[in-house]
Length: 474
Image (cartoon, rainbow, N blue to C red):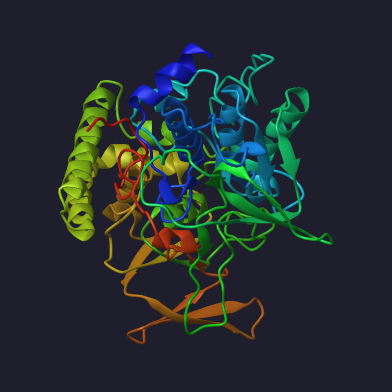
């Protein structure tokens, strides 16, 4: 076992629900699902099981398990968990409902992925390096340092890449360095067992997992542990409208940033106050072709200012974490955070803002109509997104940004050429969008029936904190 595997479980808290006996959920109910978060959570869970001597078969089990671990879902989290468990000597089966791993990002040519882009001003974000895990999976090449026991690579990317390009790298490295576990594609799996109540149960018994492969009779396997890594659900749709926004991870040929679209003199409606809405706004307004927002944020400040600004942002985020853990309401925490970020942003000189605008803002539109529950208040966002969104609140951007407070009730596509979508808010306000509106109202979690049992975490439940996953000791 390598030193990095030994060291990891010593300081990474786990953010994963134990939803039943030996069944752990890496997705449902968790707020943040960046690629980095998925990798860290998967590694932390497997390491914790290994440290507790619960990952592999123990002597004296009444029914010897066929596998030590079944991973349901072959996305970033599932593949990482499988890789990590195999490195620790476990017998692993990965079950995936599609025909290949990484199905969510595989065909996405509009979104960028990075293991570090959301985490500015953290030190590991500046370095473009994954924290503390030098040989961990689901990393991008730059350069690739292959090792026979590492999947899929060991170096981080220095800038975000298009999601589908990153998946191409992962595919190639899976071919070169197979994980060494069993795979079942085009198969759906569900655990079937009694709920448990103890954290890291004593090892008696195994879990029954029912496999339903298309065109074949159902079968069951009996692993020692199960990890659910199937995603957190689907974006919320409007209750009173037939219109449904294009999902965040799907390409949209009519998005403002699509090369085939003429944006002159047009408006787009974006609804929401979290990371998804902010990312849509930034992609609509900024000339950020490669998706790397870190240098765009740093360009707002001088080299002398940067260390001070980063220290302030870290202090704001840490204070917000403590407030949430102390039971302060989410809304009050977000409001305090926004006020603190606004102070920093208002301290940037008008000259610097105008220079930044000329350099990074698209001159050819579109204009944005941003709908929020509370205008100009951002909720669950990463520091980098919150900072850049706060900059767009400055008066220098008033000609391109308008804000409406409330909720969208319905969206109707008018029969005109070019098409126009009329958005009606709950108070009757109507907004016209010349692009299909982007509704980022949050996620409807795919709550598992097993969550009715033990909803505790193995170590620390910090998934509510409005910050990236960070090390904590309690």
